[in-house]
Figure (tube, helix red, strand yellow):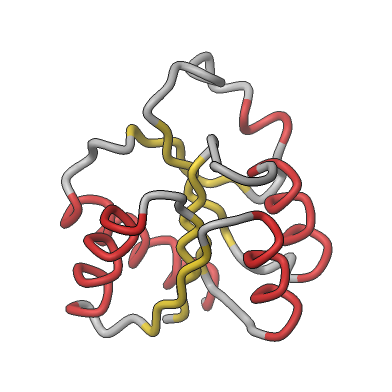
Length: 122
């Protein structure tokens, strides 16, 4: 399973990365919209873990580009805000498969990513 984590907090991205790698995932990270789009341009991913609030750029632009460039990739949105808490993210992003708080236990996030990676592959 190939996973792209798009998260401005390097510490949080590394924490999630370690948990995913324990499950055998090949993980890349990006901290900005531009870097995430560059990674999506050259690599295939099964799942993208995408923070809704990036320090640089727009998470929705990343999700939109992923929908175009990597339509098979599922997006797990994470956030520490109440944006889209009404579930409307699923209306805005066709590739959205989950919406989680950033404080979700890393092992739970990893299990969810693993589930959606297998769903995307098969």
